[in-house]
Length: 543
Image (cartoon, rainbow, N blue to C red; front, top):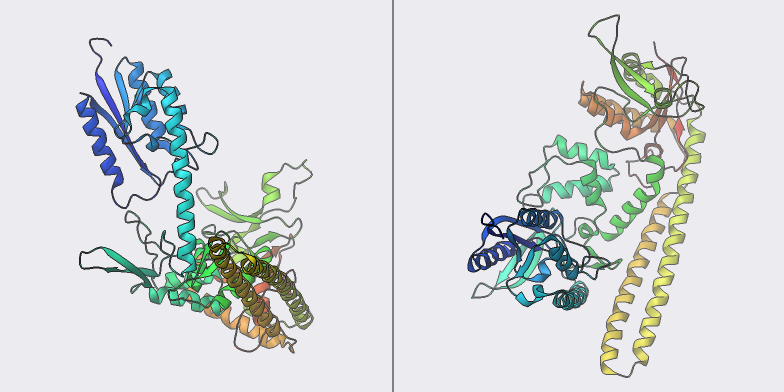
């Protein structure tokens, strides 16, 4: 060590989960104490949470700590990388996550000393690091299995397994006379209950994820941040989708691929949750469009299609030469824009004037929706496709229920034939779990059968169906005013696409879900989409 060299320390602390009890603060304090005892100056502190060292390697902060320590050592300083315990560095098996011996070898090559306050001998040699690293991995494996078993018992009792509590709920803790927690109860969140009741009411009434998000934002409802550092934000389509797909709101929680009932208030029945999830699964491939904000200022964003090649027509703005500084807005076929003229994928259709297209769509929708030609045949065809899809859902659910029943019977038979008391206790729990899964599978079959029964033959009145669609669109467009984003969202609620032709014609196609909804002349209650049966309306021409 040179005369200018110093004794330095780099501190590192980590937590595999969220650091709710300030474990990292304690680790860093222990590191400072060890550095002080050895006469070292702390040159840097690094820490991170929710970064596992068992099923993976720690995160970027450990990488930075190692790089900092190596750089100081390269300058000739006596550098120690200090942790509270060696398992803060690694608990992996060298396959899924780094083994501790890998850090020991790195330290020897980099000229860095590894120091641990709680197990100092571990860092003295490669052999000690190899032994302790293996022990750290085995301890983690044992704890992981114990945690898994504990979660199984918790879930079987109907209690919340823990983790991040979904928005719309709160926890009420119970304490003894010494202030220790003796129990907890999941309750509705007082401030957010109204918001989440509205979400599920709209979903059951047939509203799409996008419509639910628009309604929540129209009312000024905001999301509640998961962490303190986060801010409340407007509801996005993605956030609504996460809520609708979370079984916790139906009083269920997942564990190892299975759903088990929990003892907390539900926002929606499990039967309705299952039916809505099945509906979204069936309609996804036929009606899904890219989520997120559409291109600003274009009425047909995510809706315009080139009639010649079928590619999307994107809104594009350019400056024209004939009017300096004036922006020209157009819908441009993707294949026209992305390929050269001699490319086989090139589309020769020229861009459409966006101003004229948007004006024609808004001005002609009323006349367009009053045309009843050929609607009856297409609606009836759509109903047949709807029933066929329901039949497939019923068949799949019936097969799953039969498999669950067979598994329950096997588990019950094994329990009945067991002689050892401990084995009987384990098999009894297994049989109980399999029987519960069989009952849930039967409930899914019942929900699918109910939906199929509702999809019965009806006399379709195209005039009433189109009137209902027109009424909804008229209301949405009037409410949107001149807000192009809201106008676009309203059109996306009802239309799958608008085909733009080279001769100026525009051919709208009603989305499968909207066609299914408005094929019923009674109060709207959306069930399933019409699948591949799209409702094409008569064309109108851009003036």
